[in-house]
Length: 550
Image 1 (cartoon, rainbow, N blue to C red):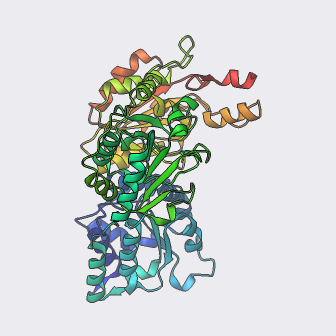
Image 2 (tube, one colour):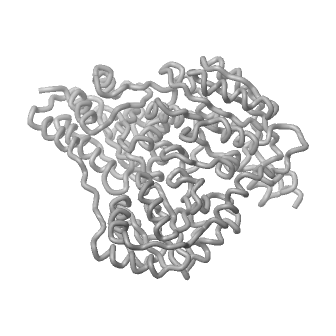
Image 3 (cartoon, rainbow, N blue to C red):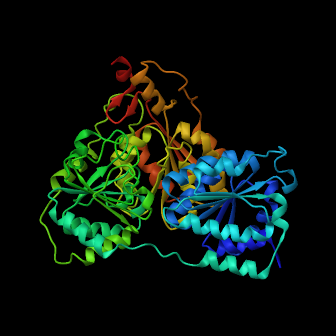
């Protein structure tokens, strides 16, 4: 016999969980104690539940294995929710354990009580409340299975505080361990689907491909397919690391504000192969692409995704890697001379020109910052980016060359970059990890630098400080022609970082940035580089003042 909390920890370890992120709470004391004693799972105490959930999401995104995140009752659960929603939209496996009020108080509006199943149901794959402590290992094992299967995502298990101390039988514990550790077999492509896919691919004259998160582990197969059939490749929104951006078949990123010229190949494609992408609002450019004239092959492990946004000519329920291998194996005799070099060179020119119209005024040009990052950072550096208009410069000027080198929330959640960089640092301690944030996003979760210092996770954060919520200001300028509520006080971000134990420096001229970045990433310490930018440069090539006057 063992306590339920101890048995849960064993099940999580068997299921591949390596780290547990939390702000400790009194409603899951047994879990905290069990994790602290575990030789397999590292317990990580953070400064805020939103930081904990972002760290867990980034960790799982890097490793492909579920991370654990925990919080207490209604208050902790509310703070945690932003990262859980991020995991849902990014299809990231995550196990959420929430302490609940004691069993005898449920439904009586006990201290901090919220109906956690109802609260988390819309933002998870599975949301349940435990009613028996002896079945907790079973619930957790099933939660791990659901989080990893099909289209991955978060699961939530709410546990009344008293159940963690219940006893679990030996047979029940052993059965749960077996369920948690059993490998999941992904569906593979059928022979009929291979034949039909080859017919469409061989008959296409201008085929393009949209790669999404479901193809993140299919890099080698994507490259081989693209080269064999002469397919131009687009990245879906914030999935730019799935295909090397310097490959001659790469056409660009389907992100926010993508110029029409970058979309020409997709508009004119006679065949579009959609691999592991759910065709979100941003990727489809507000649901206008792919064009109605294009034939569509869509491959996804989740049948519910297929044809949900765009009608398909061929829907394939399969793991993307297995589907690509099946098609490649059956097409060894095929080759083409089709070239996308002209379109690729146009993309390279656009992502290198640095023409952002702020060469003659005060402030550092973010385009120049990204250019220095490209020059200094290793090709496999992991870049974690926040929400905000500064990210437009990153998405345009940074070229992702290595797999699993982008941590970016498709939900557009603010406050992501700093904790995500920390989660990435835990998951990949041998990689250079750099977080990029605006001052708005940084001020939401920047206190997590203390977590990085305490656990010796040597990340570097570049914070663009312009004193304004730039994205909202730009929208207000476009649609209202005046601004409201977008000012941010000029905080000494570098001084704040120093108070948390990090190294820091403020940069007011691009001439000083390269040296600061080199010193930071080679220091083996936590660093913040505050870059003062001009708020009038609202995005590449656009001034806020000009939009207001237009």
